[in-house]
Length: 313
Ligand SMILES: Cc1cc2nc3c(=O)[nH]c(=O)nc-3n(C[C@H](O)[C@H](O)[C@H](O)COP(=O)(O)OP(=O)(O)OC[C@H]3O[C@@H](n4cnc5c(N)ncnc54)[C@H](O)[C@@H]3O)c2cc1C
Image (cartoon, rainbow, N blue to C red; front, side, top):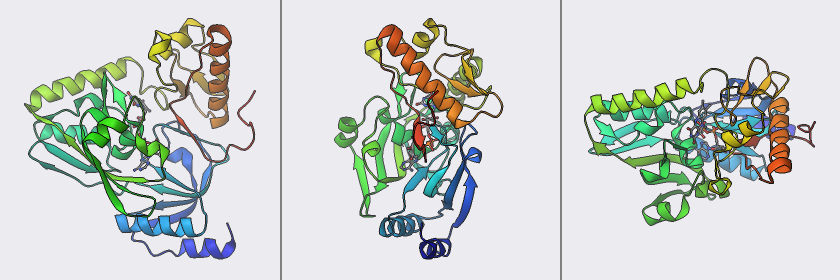
């Protein structure tokens, strides 16, 4: 980035803050990743639009950060600007509809819904990440996808206009772990969910079962990003079972390891580098392809400056 552009970016007029050289390991659930050149925490939709207009005008790459629970950031960091959505986090309830801004924690939203005697978000309690990230990923657990309960989504389009996606456009454009936002340079601002009236004690007991199940499966034992690869019905078994069938659990590189408790989770046991994690991912893909002829599709997003093949053995 040219010096005069840097200076302008550092002085940009937004309510939120903008900082330089921020370590991404503080913002990812893998607890890995190098520095982001610039890291902004906008506090309003206007702030976001101002940042996006500036970066577009100066051809600065932008990455939108939710909870950092589904990304692997390169040890070389991220060139350009990271926009952290965590301060865009209001939420409200009206009858059986819950609306929340993108930066709010999806798991905390499910707690708030329960307190309002509304069920429907219970399935996602205990899953790390933000509302925006859950919509972008079309997060799925316990046989429910976020798109199953979505009523509408407000987003900033490529021309910085606020648009709404709803109704048939949701049912037609979302699928397993896929949302239309994955194919566009848009920013999810908020989403509304259609929920059902229920008794908070019933809802909480369901939520506690889900959280307990995640604890039993070892989800919170070490830093990770949950499932590394997508499941594929055509493979006949969950990806974790496929990886396990090849005896790959426990395979490690540096401090990164395929979890001994789940074949589809890679954990950071101490001070793993992103490079170690990516190299295990490549190794696993190669082994599964070589032995079984199956092509594993990563669910986690590789973000930042990966250079050339730094992740290969
Ligand atoms: C212990 C653990 C368990 C997990 N279990 C599950 C599970 O059961 N099911 C499941 O589906 N996932 C699971 N995950 C993965 C993760 O929680 C989800 O994918 C989650 O939805 C990611 O949200 P995030 O806010 O952290 O997104 P991030 O990781 O921050 O971002 C992911 C992608 O979304 C984009 N994005 C985020 N917010 C916005 C926005 N506002 N506008 C535009 N783009 C945006 C980012 O640019 C990025 O490309 C798990 C992760 C962990 C660590």
